[in-house]
Amino acid sequence: MNRITEVFQSAQGPILNVYTTAGYPGFWDTMEVLEALQEGGVDIIEIGMPYSDPVADGETIQQSNQSALDQGMTVAKLFDQLADMRSKIQVPVLLMGYINPVLQFGVARFCQKCNEVGVDGLILPDLPMAEYEREYKAIFERYGLFNIFLITPQTSDERIRQIDSVSEGFIYMVSSASTTGAKTGISSDQEAYFARIEGMELKNPRLVGFGISDRASFLKASKGASGAIIGSAFVKLVGQAKDIRSEVVTFVKGIKGLA
Image 1 (cartoon, rainbow, N blue to C red):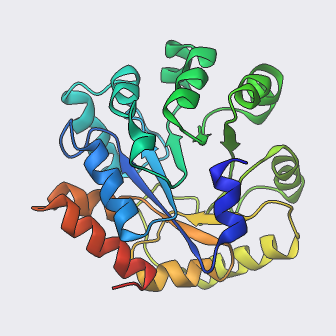
Image 2 (cartoon, helix red, strand yellow):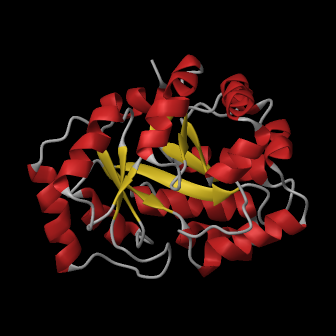
């Protein structure tokens, strides 16, 4: 069974997924951040693959992407850093990024490397669903990878049901039409959106992303889903951290209510 499925089946409370940029703040910090996230009690880790034009991401994550690229991070070097990951990391791990670097690496080769290092799924926001089904679904399945699709408040019910039918693991429920980190907190309009999706009784669980930055917004978002995703707020914390391990552990425990 995929680790993502196991997490949702065994969850005792809201699921916390934290996004971190590979090779940030320092090129060699990837594994230290992952270990600290797990120590803090995170449920799922989402590793961003640095890209020069991350269109869905706000300034904080864009800057972290550029910093990692400037330090020499590539898809191949990320796989090198993750080669021994599963000797230390037990929680599910997702790679998040954009389709172009994956195409350049080679989709089949990329999925094979994901399988080798123990990656459980992928989030590729600019991969069209029809193209995924036609060209790549069989490859993803061969290597045991879940492909996580995104929905937004503007996504039609028809498309949401299509996404639900081809999804495994969970659906990434974007809380607003803005980029990551642009807004914080959960508005009444967003709560209405969460209620609309809840009423659709989808087969897949959902995690809410964009605008989640602290325990209050995490809990509020989780009322309309199985949990939430924190990205920009965490990347900002890591970028300013003087002691990565202790500050990451404290941050995650605070979100989870374990502090």
